[in-house]
Image (cartoon, rainbow, N blue to C red; front, side, top):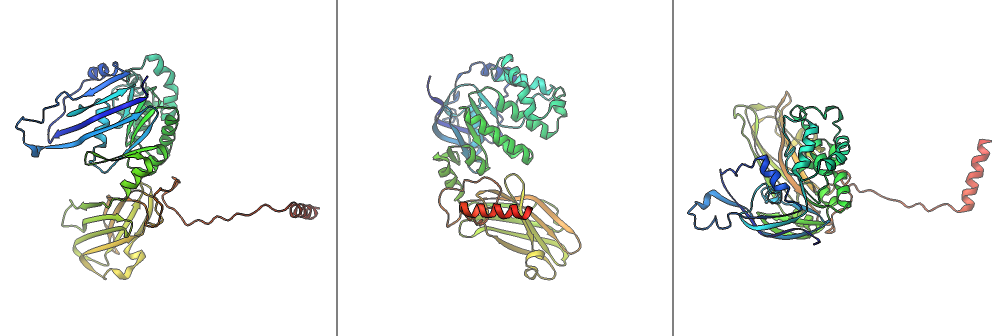
Length: 427
């Protein structure tokens, strides 16, 4: 048996803006599933982009001649900016869509969790959906039944397992979807951003399960913007940029290439101009300046005084730091004004490399006027004076200047004296 799990050669995908993919019925998915353990995904329209007279302005390439090979048991992190082609790659490997050019050879049964609840039928119960997903993956009913109790326990939906999933809360839906994908006996697991949903405790549980899956020799492709999770789970990293592979190698090298890129994010207001609002915000990070956030606000009346605030949140949505102009430096803002531009510099020496989001807030002494959740996001990379290898610790969002002091063991004589003294005191 070959030790290769996935082999992609010249893989490319072109989309036409506004065009919908061909609808695939459930019977089509099941038909594909029973062809495991060997499948080949090859373009059925290899030359469709040539000589067809189409307007190139209505087309864009989500992937461009991507080639790589993944061996059995490898845990590979796929990282990149939004629009880099990560999700398109996993959709091709999951046989949800076909490539425009190239081929992807896959050896083994594939389990995928590309969207929350993919493959779930809302009218069916949780129990029925577990067995349905097992059938889609090509598993026998006995195999699914053997994993059933473990799946239900992990998802924590015992009381509602015979309730139609359309009545589930979003959290229950997420837990059951991940549990099914992670516990089914597939050789290859494809996961796309599932750890970005759910509460912090569930995300921690998912990371632990992913680590367990990897230790059992299954091949895992993991797409995530959570750099700590990628670093913890993966040995190899593939960095995609605009549909091309920019880096393929050890995961720390992929993180280094990803995080040291200077990238800006911006927010543009869409609310009513007749109310106080933040019109525009932009943020960027570099190892020399840290986070630089600039925003402009306007109001139809005087703000007395104007107060601008920010909240910095990590990739899991947990607040890391918050401040505002009144609390930190009230002298910066005039006593009253209707419009203005504010720039805030946030040092990042204590922050762990990760993707952070920033919420914005505008107020005066009388009331809050505008609050924008997750207005912009910024990738914080390695500091100027750090080694290229990111810190191994994945606990928390900050790195404090902790001091460790080694205290040598006491000599036997000193220890005996202390014990005797302690005994005398007790007497």
